[in-house]
Image (cartoon, rainbow, N blue to C red; front, side, top):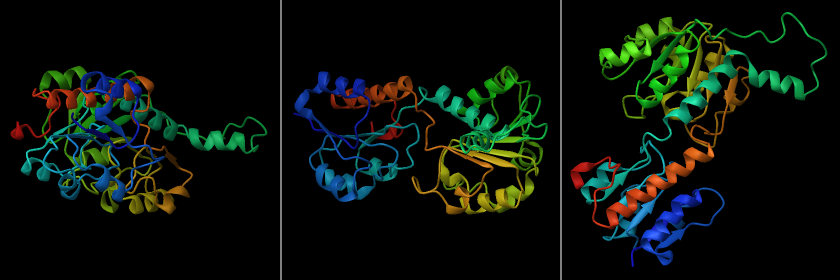
Length: 326
């Protein structure tokens, strides 16, 4: 009987797939309220054939060794997998999978929501009404920025970045992007997007939306120098990973009005947020809601389950990120 350890309860559709394929007794779902404690993870994973973590679970060599030699797959419940030591997994012959594709449109919706709220000061306006401060209409009340016909810069033009670009076209925006490599000409033309270097992106963007993976090269890709280089009326959006942005530098840039506003769904030390950011009225802050729709989160659970089922049944998992182990 295989053992599948799930670090936190996920949508039922994914759990049911695992039960149907592997048996009720194969599935162990951590029951704690919140992220699983490190000590509990190291203890409970012993003898597991498969591990299904979420993006806040740090899965390193110690966790893999605690599982023992039976561990065959780590099926991350996320598209990103920087929480997993993939090199350590590969060295031990353990497959690592993710849940790509399915959350691109939903995360792009979240980025667009943050962009609109930051542009039109939605968070400030909502607080203004709830606090009873609205007494009359005013020609100068909470004036924001137009989105239509502005320049949108996209840092990282993968699936999510391209989905954001598609939304920007409906607003007649001028779209610039920076990526590891330029997109094919046909894709650029379909999106109405122009490839530029990072310096140009910073200098010309009215709105700058981050959609790159977190790597050593992108860690703190946005810091003091970048905020100085941006327009003073620019707005920064981040739905990628928190550590791509230096939060302390961003808070200072917002307070000093080096840039106008920011919309953030991710943070460096989630759920902790830099105290200075919490004091910035010109920051819209979400609790990592990028893929938070019933439809998308359920599909993510099903993809993670299917990756595990395929691996344990001797088949190739559809979303392997370290195929050299196969």
